[in-house]
Amino acid sequence: MAVRFGGRTRARSQALQLMFQAEAAGRTVPEVLEGEYALDNGPLRDFGRELAVGCDGVRHDLDAIIATRSKEWSINRMPAVDRNLLRLSLYEMIYVPEVDVPVAINEVVELAKAYGTDESARFINGVLGRVADDIEAGVDVVARAHEDLAARGESSADVQYALEGGKNDVWEEPEKDFEPLPFGAGMEDELTGGIWYVEGPGTIENDDEEDW
Image (cartoon, rainbow, N blue to C red; front, side, top):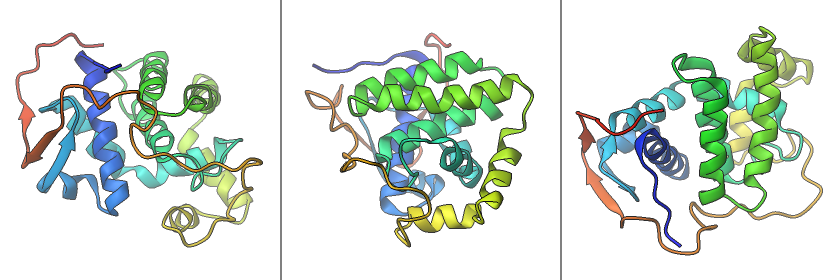
């Protein structure tokens, strides 16, 4: 069954795809945007571009939060879709004040149901819920994450090293074997609307669809 998203949900889906492609290619999001990239429901919306570029710019901080809040998977062992959905929601929760925290969480949970594994939505909701509790309590979650890493004798550089394949033992391995799936592997059909292969910006400047 095909999956269709509209409004800002579609923009978030596009941001996820850009982030996934950047990580898979070992490039930054701006580098991906300068060349050819694929979207399942394009062309690229401005909000999707802003989210993807914004996440990329603070990715080390976002990864520090994920690495210290994930109880089930080490950051370098979790599925890439889950990891990028967590980055996406955390960015909105921390850096996009016009988006309410519950909305930021609910949106990526819905995307997880479409693009992730059977366990993705529950896993992502659990991690983000813990972060949301701290935000509500007035905790600086970025500073807290780096402090927690330091308490482990680690740093954000160690997190990135693990993500790049330098080592798998930064944090405890999951109890069960799990092979991360490629983007969209949980879907029953091809991605909706065909694939938009874009060379250059390809954005929608005037966005009049329903927004969250």
